[in-house]
Length: 522
Ligand code: ME8
Image (cartoon, rainbow, N blue to C red; front, side, top):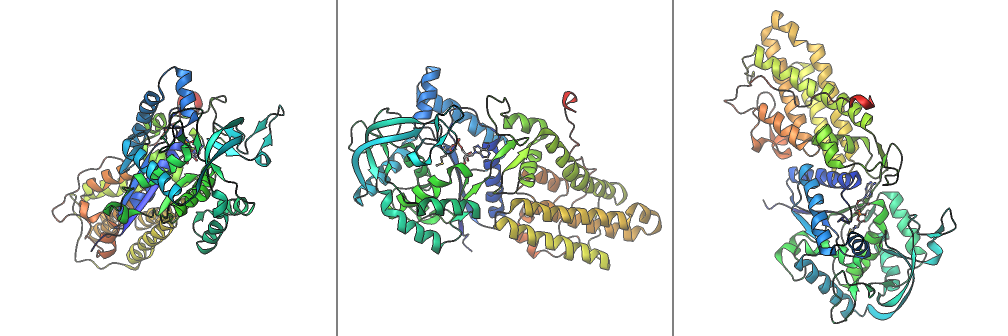
């Protein structure tokens, strides 16, 4: 059977500083979805990277007295390192200075031009370097000192220069039609409503080239112009799958299934991007999902507040899977969420160390110690409680987990998994194998076999969230690689089918140690 393709992307980050926890959050969430789809049997292409052009990068490089290209290379390495440390399973990490990306950006430019959507004029208006965005006068807000700020609260400067314009105004109606016909094009609902209001308010043509600096993709046949950084940056989603040209890769993966991005850049992805694609006669992505922002104890991260967190330091301190689990369970995907060290420790201890980890540890060590590491595979009659746990609770968890993850309801998927973990802990307490050891050893072995199946299935289900810990656990349990897919779980018969037949369980080591807060903070 040929696998159905699935294409997912993160935003590409500005590497004008080191990655922060917001970048880590987006990478982790997108990775969980990509891993989930692979387990569902899809042929996944997962794209991420850095967005190295534009004025922000040029200015940062100037401040540091280095070339923008050197800054891009140096800083992009930190983003890649973050992804690798966090176990982010990207297929391509793009840096937009790469030659194939310049070629793709120039190709889309020519397509817009061929469609009659570009014209040369003079731009006069407000520009925010921090947002790399142009704003209409009517969108600006007043700062505390009476200065003009962008709607995102960033400084704006008056800009006047010769520029190429894209006929964005022409796409107001086509965009509104597309939103109406595809209610899931922009999610969540709140973001969709924002975009609808913005587009209904009318669209001005968009300045798409700059002449006051030269750090960017050169505009074809237009000396002195570089492309507006967002036009080139958005095109990375095409570069990654082989655009331009009618390549097999492009036909396979495009249009993208999901662009996963933060709420601050929904306008670029849900207005400008589909308009560029319509103009270039390229199919539109299926969905743009704008996740929320991570706040440090409810406050926005900022260098001046000194609360910008290094995700690698957090991963080293709490564990990669612990950080992944915390961010994905604590924050409802699509909403803002808050994090603190105490919250990470509390949640990971409650859910991972005390509930799932403890369940696995006590069950597996009991099997190792009291059953010589062997499971009862055949010859026992499951009781009503056994059937209820496996068919009722664990099967239902798989179904709910899959349904929620398929809808990007990541925290709800984890909640359904946690409910099944609780049910297993209740089962072990009610069955009390430690008592059965003396009174009914055959039943004790059966109870442990049921728990083994349940734990194995729950570990397989939660792999997208906890890839390393589940791999270690499933290794300890002797579950062959081929049995670790959702399809394999669905097809399997219960009772002893999970472990490799010649497997003997060794005394296990705990997979989730209890976390402690550092002394000075506890
Ligand atoms: O916007 N919490 O790059 P970027 C959660 N280069 N997510 C956050 C966040 C936070 N506190 N802060 C930022 C850019 N993000 C462009 C994208 S795509 C063609 C070009 C998210 O480095 C942000 O919303 O400013 C975005 O999705 C991503 O991190 C990169 O942000």
